[in-house]
Image 1 (cartoon, helix red, strand yellow):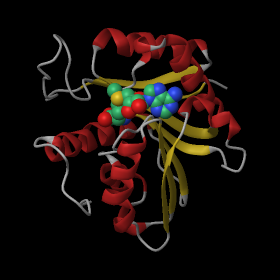
Image 2: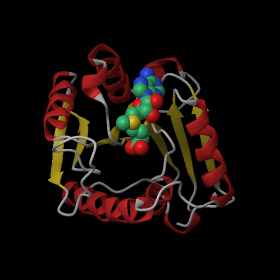
Image 3: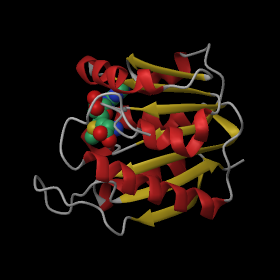
Length: 202
Ligand SMILES: C[S@@+](CC[C@H](N)C(=O)[O-])C[C@H]1O[C@@H](n2cnc3c(N)ncnc32)[C@H](O)[C@@H]1O
């Protein structure tokens, strides 16, 4: 789905297109399918560049959906809102909130999520906060729902995956991106380098 305003940087459009392919492959391997009227959370979403990709995967053709993106950074949230709110279909509720995504336990009005997405999780920058974020995200997942993380680094991916497993998640898929775009700011860092799908273990 095309954004209402152009992406901020060159390369993002290709990145999110490739992400869509990887996500589709991972989800298909688990046998999961989005329910009608899915509730989707995009936690620590930043500019939420992947919103069009997620809508295409979860609610193709403008199917009903409630999608909520949360990030601490107000400027990124405002940019996400400007880019994506205008493309929502009439049966789709797209929301972007500035706030602490590690406290989704406080969002009592929100029904359990069918799909939780955390792109480029940042586990090793603040392990206590990200542990809380992952734990509450899993707790907020519907029994039949899936939680997807992507990571810039292999090691960080393994740490976040281990944390989720300790919190009671079951890993159902773990893919290495075959065409992940390398990023020059750190060795071994690339866009959506790894993608894993989890569900609740019981
Ligand atoms: C590596 S960036 C990834 C952003 C976006 N998901 C992406 O892939 O472009 C990590 C993001 O986590 C956000 N973040 C960190 N702690 C957070 C928290 N407690 N609640 C909400 N957002 C948080 C940061 O503001 C930042 O946007």
